[in-house]
Image 1 (tube, rainbow, N blue to C red):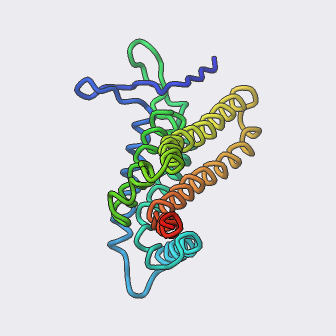
Image 2: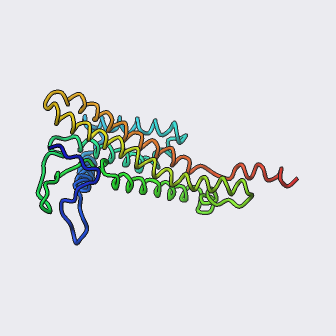
Image 3: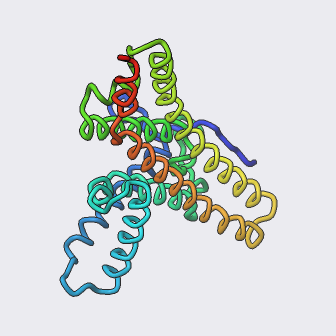
Length: 254
């Protein structure tokens, strides 16, 4: 029988800490990216080969896109590592979840048959953790760019009742970002997993193939959206705040 679980299944534990099938595939995605990055770095050459040319084109395209949001190439190059790493990690995690065997290879744990691997983003814990990391980095980058007090004056502004209320709304929006990040990615990936599982169960072999290509596209789009939202929020965090206060100060003095 088809078994669809909203919760990621535990497959073993390390020092009492449960390791789920989603965590296992997420760790594999991290190791895969790390190994590929080290191998690619060692193969860098002044006269690039085909693989290096492809990645240089991808990086140039990413920088051009970031330029349109951040405004200049220097700033884009500064924040490319965090934004592009988030995009690649989500993308590889989504695509690894579509490989044959993910969800179908089972082991016996605790007297039950559980899948050995599961798409990381189909576990809400993964998307919530990734969202927390992204929002934390966004605020850290904002503090590094404009200073601690200026960054937090966005959330705690005591210049007047209206400014204070707007600051509270900004603080609430930071938590809303976490919810938006996590549930958007989780909902789309988990729904895709359920769709593929149902189609494979009802009509196996060729019929699920178009849905597989659809999920490959959806996995890319969700990674792109996650990366773009991170980029936009970084741009908002590093922007100089308080310009309106300086402009309105002389008027209020009169």
